[in-house]
Image (cartoon, rainbow, N blue to C red; front, top):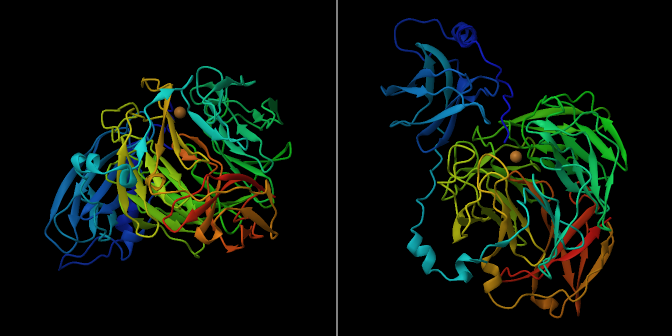
Length: 582
Ligand SMILES: [Cu+2]
């Protein structure tokens, strides 16, 4: 269980607030007569990530107020241009992550909401006029729908450990590990497990596949909040090796594969429990530190290789940013999300340069998207899920739709009373979510999901911490597309696809193929899959094949292993062929 207090060593509230007031008051217009807003023009656009009391817009007339102080605070609000006012009592920040309390504020009038403490102006935030989510559909409607509309779950089946980390390997087998017990290799074809003991305890490491198909895990577990400096590699032959050590330990880091075979490692807590501010870049058994890119970022950052070749950290911090690993490294940009607190929300690159971020916090059903092919990029609202959830997993499907599984609407890490069982499917074309079939097992903290090559989604984990039930089992979801008639078939695919060189994928009926898509193999933990990324491939139809070409842009398709899918016009995918892009 993770309980860091990132930026909140006990705060001396009064002097700090006084400082804020002084600043705000100095900027306020000094006029008598008619009531004038004490906030400077444009104040509602201000970003206030570093401030202990934050105000953010949610949807409709709803706002969220958060308090990072370790004492309760009462704030007053007004709605600009109306007589509406009131107050919000904020509890002290809890001693767990995220280390702030929050309260929903729903106002009657549409207008800028202004926040005050003891009558002094603190923050203002515009009402962005975003509709709130549709009502949760009635369970009776859902159970009436067939699998061609709502998909279908298998019954839970045994898994030898809690699969806190869940990875698809180039062999098509699934590697998993948790806190207790040896890592396990599962063969989906036979259903059999084999134990693959690791040289160090990899619980809470950050893992992703390298360009040549090795699973690289950065860090590991000494104790809660204390990480190992090891880099441990699972080789394709099924054995472990140890690479060069990092400069400091990392517990809760993220590892992201780059365009030239480099593996970028950020965040995590070291042997002493201190956040490691400097990223490191592993390449072929060597490691370098980005000495000019110091930034303390919390939790497993939701990081993606972006179209510009930099690494986009979408969260969990409110402000998204780019990390450049050129030279000694640099951070740039400042793209605040629409929703401030997405702690243990999930994020996925659902198309080239496009990221969906959903859920998280205490607890939201909202979601937002950003398009990194635009400059500057900006987060935009998309549809909200039917169920609020944190510790959910987002998994991109061969269609480019995104499946949300698991997680809980409970406001503490171990509260599974509000567990979300229904899978939900997000459409990139409409921005709307559809509620699908429900699984059986409540999966919250340490739940994991990955896409299998056969187009189903493996959902496992939950437990091994936070006094939760240890779920040593898994369930598999078959999305609706598997109940919509015959699947296209890949009769042969080349094991390697080379940049800029066309390759032929054999299929009995090329005329039926409407789309070709590519998804990097998944590597999920802590509500985030560090491996998966989706893209569409252009193709041409031949007599018994489709011809595809991997674009030469390595930022689009970093080298490594992907599932290649053929889809027909009903959006039914083939079984994916695992191919290596190089
Ligand atoms: Cu954990």
